[in-house]
Length: 438
Image (cartoon, rainbow, N blue to C red; front, side):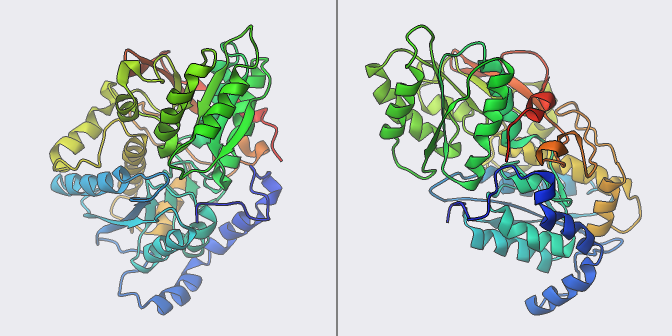
């Protein structure tokens, strides 16, 4: 399974539509009772999600690995490296950090298995993870009251569940920011995105950015997220983008790990068409993708790329790079330029701040949630704005009440390197508020 549509609409649900998640917030108050029943069936050993006062802090990080679609092996790999590093330096607030990892294989079944294991093994949080299958894993986390800190932002539920604490604006913010930037630089725009539930959320946000700048909406082109080639999709996108002889069009591939595969097909096809610009979002392209597709001669040369964070060469990443240098042990899965790794670093910074705020008190799923819900302000070293979660934030009007960081960065590929196109962050909150969602 690859996150295919269900009969029920999941397109950026309005606030009143996600009553299931809202109800879960109430149920979470009685999570211990529900958790007891679930754990009894799993044969859990002593040590539940309620944690202990002086035992290790147990968390889980999951992501897909070795699949035919998007893979994020660097996220759990970095989480393990972070645990080694933090434990070698006194732990978190004097407590040892234990990181469990899980491969969700990009399937709903395995995503649910990962969540059940987090419950069974007493995780106080799921931290810095990636999964497209929120409908499968959130019910288990919500039933046990386990917070989801710093997910990748690939599903709507990450911005609606009261137990979710996202550190970035996910794909919605990236597409809104990209559309806003391209509005004055592109003729016809073609978006090539996955034919999945997660992919369905992308067009409204790109269009919000484009229309804010007075541009027409993009041509929405669905594509399989696990295809070995995209010749047909590349040709269709080029036809759309070159439909106006007066203005150079733009092609935006947002296919995750398959973006490089699309660009191979695009490069072979584009000679038959007028010149177009390309643009995309981090997560669909990073420095390794630019390198593998030709560097300075890549089809990405000159492309705009929106991201959540500063470029990888920014000194604000030095702390993360220190962890990688000292504790990753040459693990090739971990790349400091990978947005999944960067998100995991920020998510663990949130966890650390929460645990340290609890002092000598109990560290449990309940107390971690309590600290976050009480308005704890998290400083991420200017990698993001200061983070603080309230249930109903500014973007609740479009069904994203947990989205507290709508800041993006604008990067470009220049001489084969991803560099900052503009200094600082761009706040796209107002742009996203204009999105036409169901």
